[in-house]
Length: 425
Ligand SMILES: Cc1ncc(COP(=O)(O)O)c(C=O)c1O
Image 1 (cartoon, rainbow, N blue to C red):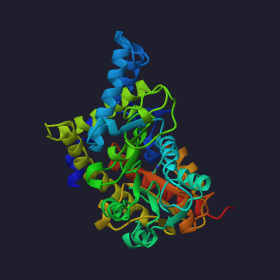
Image 2: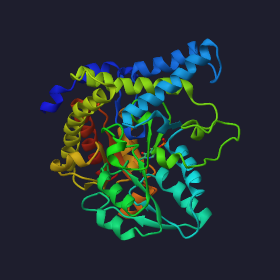
Image 3: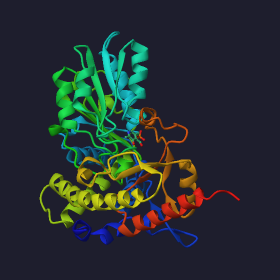
Image 4: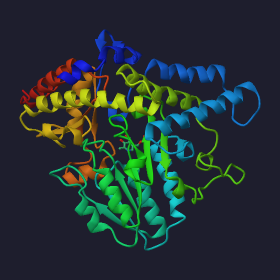
């Protein structure tokens, strides 16, 4: 509980106006975070300021167009710091992770031919599976499915090695699962895949709110994430290794720029959301500064994660321990307190004989916000033999949640599940 005392939770919560909202006097508990987080006031202010004061298209010489270009440049610089990208030219900003991945898969498809092999996992969100499957269908690629280990809840190196061949062109992997919460050993997996000559495409959407990403030390070729999962606006970001993306020819308008990253950013960008994205990254940096780090933005971001990870892990353990008391409840993910560093604080479970949606609807009626279903972790539910139309109950913590909220959620889960167990009269 030391970690909890160190984290400035009241100051953090004070930055998020949505956390103070009530509905007919009832408080809200936001545990729907893996589907999208709330935003600090500063993010909403930046979006609004951009729309109200400097709304213009790019490329001109007058005041507002120059300011709009600055907002675009600032967002790329902020994301380069967030991901430790060597250059802003490697940062591509777009609608969301799924759109960016479809775009990049189609682009990479121009370098592939029938008979080439690609590897997708049974652990990934569909956003990092479907684009590759459809590319394979179009081009006659061979698809290999990489399962996760049901004891470790991770993709194991041996399983990856068994699928790689000289023909493997790409491995699509997730950093952390949006259902089980487990984190893959990305550096090792990436090194194995790249040694075999494959490109590595990493989905970091669920990892990004919970851990420091360093694309240079990961050694992957592409990494994607979504700002709305880490306190920013609804948009996605792709990092691509310069020596890889420089040689790619995306589908684009003939007259649009061939420079990086504009070559991959189609049409007019979401300029106001980019202003919000910079504010979201600065929110992390401010958190790091409050924790005593006064140097570069990258270092302040790193410090923010250092303090928030410890805090989140304490909440995750509180949740896992409390759920484990419920008879017939199975957590679908890592439950060992020694292995909290190998998971993000997203906890999914099923309960014998009770549909997840029934539990969730009841808890939602107590103004506890959480999700049921497969949540697009379509391959995971199939590998685990969970009916896809039912899925799981998913509780996803963000660093603005509190121990008191987790306690209330646990009390609600106990009460609701006991009530649903009662035989109907
Ligand atoms: C792990 C993971 N990958 C990809 C996505 C898709 O992200 P987007 O909504 O930005 O397309 C999600 C969304 O929940 C996700 O959790």
